Length: 140
Image (cartoon, rainbow, N blue to C red; front, side):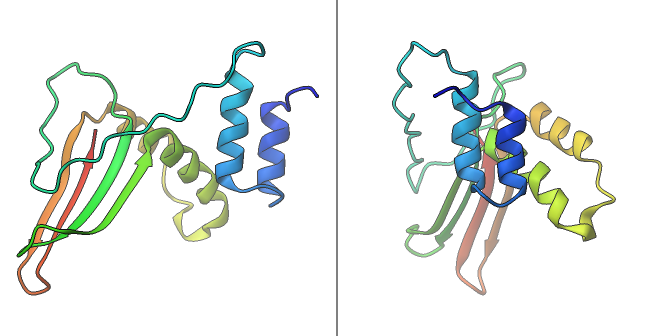
C-alpha cells in the first residue's frame, strides 16, 4: 500500500475521519524513508519534582517539549503533569484555529514563529499559597 500524501492526511483530519494524533503519526510516516523501520518512540525523561528547569544558554537547540506541572506546595508531589511535543502543539494550534472563530484575529505565523524562537526554560512559575499549588510552565 502506498503512503498517503500530506494533503490526503490533512483532508481526513479536517473531515473528522482521523484524530489529530493519528494525523501526526501519518505525517511523520510520510517523511520517513520507505525501507527503514520506524524508530521506537522516544521517551522523554520526566523532571524530578524537586528539580527546577534551568534556562538554556544562548544559541541552544530549539526546545522540543512544552511542559506544564502543578504540584502541592507542602509535599512537592505532582498533581498534574502535561507534556506536549512542541511540533504537535504547533500542529494543534493550526488545526484548532479552523474550529475556533473567536481567535480568528490571531496571527498564527507570528505565534508559531515565537514558539520556534523561544529558548528552553521557565515561561511561568506561580506559587498560590491559598490553593497550596505551584504551577510551572516551561520549554525544554
